[in-house]
Length: 408
Image (cartoon, rainbow, N blue to C red; front, side, top):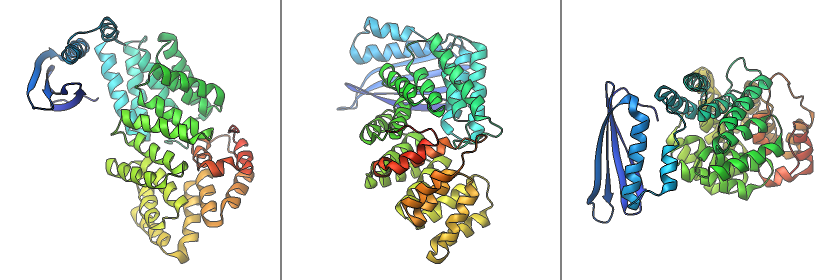
């Protein structure tokens, strides 16, 4: 989490006999942390503690607090639990602080935030070059720089994927059993179209770090590519259970439900995503795809122009586009204009499908030239994940194989 200059925050953790709740207040270079366990049945406080430390002692404070909570919950701290608490990934407070800031920016998922995330991970590595989690975070930031993901300007896809894979492998060299690093490696390999190797890395990451939401999330996307929808949904649901307030996880689960033809659940999850972050580009992109593929043009008229405004279109032009999407007589031309404005093979293919059916979409994907300078593989994953029926069509498989997709 990002530490604020001052003020406090609280968090609740469910324990077998109740809820552990606490708050953190920072004033200058001092931290005050309070924690207490409340019995849920009666509301009685069964344990409480307060810690006053310098902010340079945050790592030892974290260890002491975790140990105290674990002991209060179970009555004793097992040797294995004590070993986990003692195994700090870094002892450098500056590195740890930079890593937390890196994850904060990374989770916001905009191009400027991803650049800021990479800078923080690099700062963490500069402070502690043996910090495996920071190397893994750097890999995660780099892989999302790709065109067709978050469009960080001036990125060469091959170069950035090489850097991402190097950072992930560096993390594994430092911590061979770090599941986070296997997830990072899997994502970099997937975008290099090394599908079998990527799947093995994801499976290893989930096995080693079963409580790490991103490992389940990215493995879920990988399973979509292989047309294994029931498994993909289970992985996405697990990611959502582990990180219920994540907008990325929420909208990804919505997309998984969509592809699995579980439309009511997809609708409900998209509504959750809109509540969590109505202006988030990823929510607007995936929601627009959902609207288009389901023929909900009134909702598309809200979502897609709003996305264009978020990405820089002037409000008047976006509003005019939305108005035309609502008019059946003007809709076709407006949809084709959205395809022209997006500049992406994937959205154009979806528009052709909406206007003329599956055959036109498949024909387009069979003919379009892939631009080697601007990888559209990331957004073409969406075309590969439109559902088991379309993905199983031999013509669709052949069209996607031109872009390096595996045959399920």
